[in-house]
Length: 141
Image (cartoon, rainbow, N blue to C red; front, top):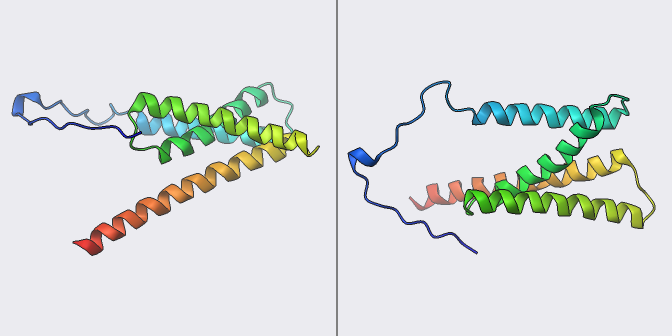
């Protein structure tokens, strides 16, 4: 499924004002989410007895694959992209848990490592694909 984008004629009055410095919170929120997820993974991998271990590890298990899948689905509209990436993250977590239970090798650290490896691999493939697209465009010019 592909989203069709229609570009309208740009008039000086129809342009939106760009946010000024300090108003765009996206990088700040992304950094905070990365820190929270990393702390959750670290607490779960070290076996800490902290009460934050469960919620932060769960956040990591949902956010890491969702971010990787969302990066791969760049062409979708934002709502569809969020919905598909969160659903994909839940499916991945369930498949990892089911696979580990089926082979009788269940462990929290093993599940975290498998989800981390999958998310890293998907992000790496997206970056390689984007880099190849840029190289091909430069060579064609």
